[in-house]
Image (tube, rainbow, N blue to C red; front, side):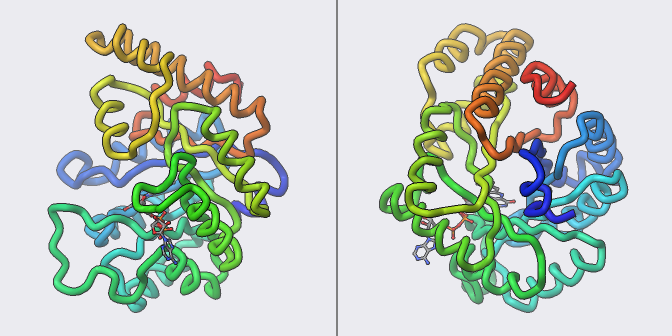
Length: 288
Ligand code: FAD
């Protein structure tokens, strides 16, 4: 089903998974079990990430196929970096062949360890260029959004301008980068609406499983850490079980507050962990 159609009917709960490394899950039975467990809460869609440069492309397609086989709606991420129009055409043809109707059009980042034989921006410089190329292929298109500004953007207003341009090119919903401070999200959403953006903005929520993981993510994404979360990290950081419990509570209360604040969708970055994610959904009260 198309995500723009789903969003016209209801607010959504969705999940993100990533293709596990070959050596950790050679036959994809692990990710199949994860996805099968996640069907318990009937997610509105499941997104599958895509490695910039395409090293996990076949596995990303296989996972989209598994999502479909479990009667769920896939959202396939596609990145611009390192791709020619021809490569992209091959992937979109494969997605159409599988019956995938939704694509998240992204620029991607050049992985530090990766050397491209040619200019990585050969055909698409920005996500916008990729969205423009894919739009005639009749996919329902999503784009990324940054409540705390994309690290390369000059200011937050420019990010909103980029979202407006994406909307004009056919992007019909946005999923945000993770954030831990709901006030930041609500302010960002207001700015987007004031600027005239109409597409739904789905909140990306990263559950906290380990203190170390969060410190690393904060360093990479530059997102802010509210005092309440700082206290949790300091208090429980040395105890994995207690940290997971407190982190799940934090994510659940973030979700509940966003939902009560009228958010159009919640997208959970699952890190391929179904047990913890189902626990967070139950605690949030979003699904019984
Ligand atoms: P863009 O929209 O192209 O923006 C990138 C930068 O360029 C921004 O600073 C923007 O302001 C600027 N810009 C955009 N258009 C123009 C223009 N016309 N002129 C000048 N400047 C411009 N990465 C992956 O590799 N694989 C994934 O599966 C993946 N999934 C993601 C899912 C979500 C929900 C999010 C939020 C991010 C994801 N990423 C993924 C990371 C993403 O690829 C990076 O954040 C990347 O740096 C930016 O991607 P983008 O699509 O926002 O790029």
